[in-house]
Length: 519
Ligand SMILES: C[S@@+](CC[C@H](N)C(=O)[O-])C[C@H]1O[C@@H](n2cnc3c(N)ncnc32)[C@H](O)[C@@H]1O
Image (cartoon, rainbow, N blue to C red; front, side, top):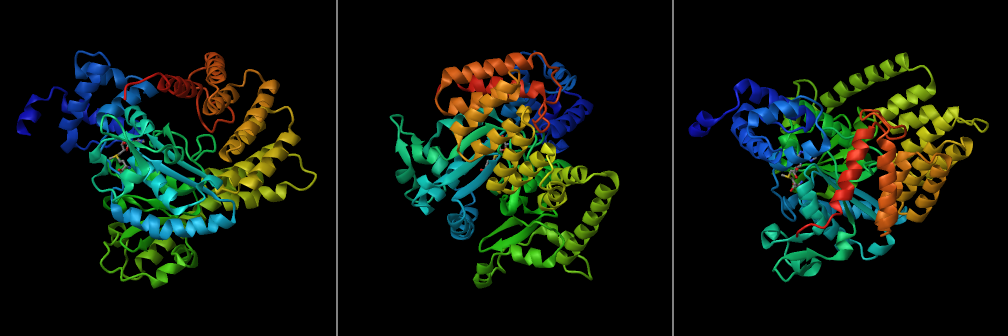
């Protein structure tokens, strides 16, 4: 260790500056103790960027906004790819024995729809483990609309995940029989996930420190369960808090968040209640914070019968927040209540119209309150498409898809010449697995505005999924050519904050990920 320190070439001031830069752009935290690791990784990244020395490379990277290819190369050298099937078995036991049965039972009666997100999915073992559990628990899987979104910042990991081929080491803690039932042995003595399980998982690039979520556009809305395990621990405290807040917004009311047992102390969010499941601690979102009844309602009723939990680790975050007069939970709720009341007053004093108030509440993820503000403005004779569109987004984020579709159709009808509503409608239809309908409405959007880059982009994705690769290429090409006429940093309308440059990067990497690669 001492030797390494003596050998380092970057001045300490630059190491400090670069680690700060990485924390804000990629979310990765490199405290002083890890600066040697950082320098080693940067040396390797510098070679890939074709720099002769790490210092020149670091100064070049910090000289302007990081592009997606730069982030991807950095991420491939700086991130940790440790993962395996059914890692932290107790979490998966809780998922199988408590969370899934309740969820599956309630959804069986209301539309057979489930949405799960593995954020920081690495090479895919985590989302495939979730998919395997679902395949075991749901005999009529084909009748369900199940989406497991798996995202990561490292494209190399995502490529491996999409292949779905693993060595024996990935199964080191997997329950017996999993490999035999859900994998096919390849000629090279590796194991390939079976198509029916693979089809449940969609992999995508997403930088948790930067990208816009929740968003209907990236499919990161209305999640029933979010897994974000062994990712938060690499984030610096403020970044971790921001990420957790946004993940909680991505959850449906009553949705579940799983983090790793070693990350429990990092979770403190007004919207997340701590749930002690036998053998594991998870979090559950409850809509209106600060209410004691809601907090206890978040604890599932069957836990009344749960075995003794005294052996479980205590959430250190809760202990830290304790006060001599209030229980930790009450204290937390009271603080939250005051903060929320203050925020509410701020919203009401700065935003005048109900639409503005509704938008502000929507931005905060307070969907039920946002809907309450917007609905009265939409009396029978009102034709305010903007408010209808907002209501559609609110409902989509709450997972109330039928209501979202209804209001989006109303927005399309009220503002017939605006292709933005068609685009929104197509995204919601797509979320429902209604690809044909989505394609039809996107074509209508292009009829209204043939230079609508987002519609070309969405058509590129949809046709690609339908196997129509020529059509897909054409739409991606059109989108790129339209985007070349924009300024890189120009935010696209209806794109929830995505800039022209960012969309072009996404398209390029989607197209390049289709290029043949070695397994
Ligand atoms: C140790 S792995 C965890 C994999 C899996 N969740 C598990 O628990 O086994 C951490 C993953 O987080 C990803 N990651 C790190 N920073 C990220 C960021 N800012 N956005 C998205 N993913 C990130 C890494 O690329 C890596 O794949």
